[in-house]
Length: 169
Image 1: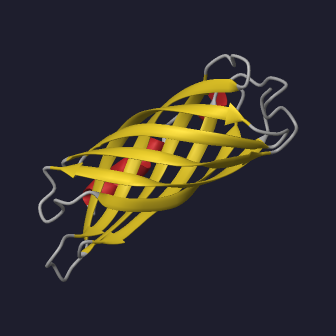
Image 2 (image 1 turned 90 degrees about the vertical axis):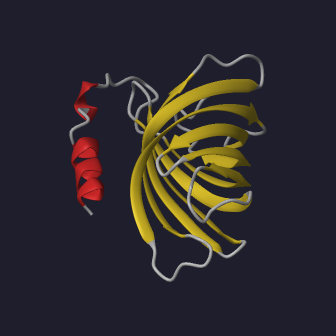
C-alpha cells in the first residue's frame, strides 16, 4: 500500500504546467487495443497472456498525457494495470508517425493458484508507430517494456480516435 501511495505522490509532483502551449494543445484521443503480455520473473505468472484495454490521451503542448487501463484473465491469472504516461510524438513521415513514452504503472494481479490479489507499482517505457487512416482514425502498434513486478514486454495493436482539432496530420 505504501508503494501505491508513493507512486501516486510522484505522479502528482510532475509539473504539467511546464509544458508550453501550442496550436495542438487541448486535443484528445481515445484508443482501444489488444495484444500479448510476456511476463518474466513474476511469481505465479509464467505464461504469455492475452491482454486488452484502452487509453485516453490529452495533448498538453509539449507532449500527450495518457491514462490507460489493461486487463488479462487467462491461464488462472488475473492481471490488471492502470498506467499513466507522458508521450512525445515524432515528426510524421507521409502517413506514419512514431511516438516514445514512459510512465508509472499500478498493477493489481492474482497469480495462478492464489486467492488474494497483489498490488505493485512499477514503471514502463515504450515506442509506438501510428498509421493515419482518416481525419480522426489512426492504427497504432506498441512495444512496451514494464518493470516491477518482475519485467514484462507488451506487444499491442489497436485503433486511435483523435479529435480533429490539432490531432496530427
